[in-house]
Amino acid sequence: MQEFNPVHVHVSRGITKLGAAIPSVSLPAVVTCRPGAPCARLCYARKGRFAFTHNKDLLQRNLLIWQNDPEGFERDLVIAAATSRFFRYHSSGDIPDEAYLDMMVRVAEKCPHTEFLCFTKKFEMVNNYISNHNSLPPCNLHLVYSAWGDFIPENPYGLPMAYIEFKKGEAKIPENAMPCSGYCGACVQTGRSCWDMERGRNDCVVFKQH
Image (cartoon, rainbow, N blue to C red; front, side, top):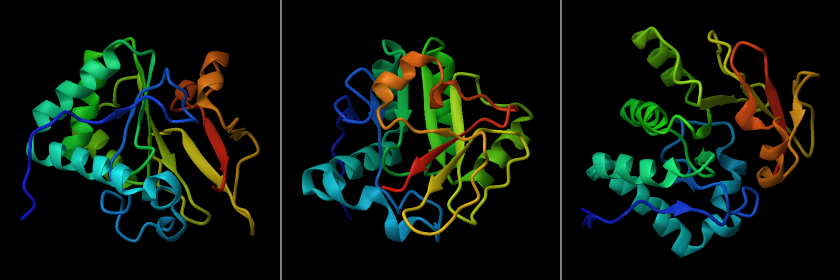
């Protein structure tokens, strides 16, 4: 059994695409993702800088903190997000369980002046959460369902969607899909970024395959 040593959650502030002003928290890819995720084989979070031992250890440490000290995990996220205009969940990984989603809602409520963004393929979990609570998450928590080719999430609550433009082959991408600029640090200043997408408007974004 892996020993757990309580430490603080690693919150990144230097991811090139996000820019230094947008903190983010990530978890290990695949193990926190939906079983049989269609993107697993080509996942960008399994290569490049994510494959470095140091970075893999940081992601695993974050997951261990969540599993062993969820209150500490939540506290660290509130501290990191409270003074930031924008916050990003999961450049790597996905929402591991419903308790984590509940934590994300509480963090958004505690930081009403921060806009939170999370792309997820755990659409069943989110749909069930909304149904069971009979309410949508806070408006500053932007949950975006992530499609992958023919894998199109069920979206009864009209959450924003993300699509992939593959290097080869075609994908069903709506004509109104906003193309990703490639650099969030500048995009968020335009008022037309992923953080500005709203539910119920058919808002969507398209990314080029990494």
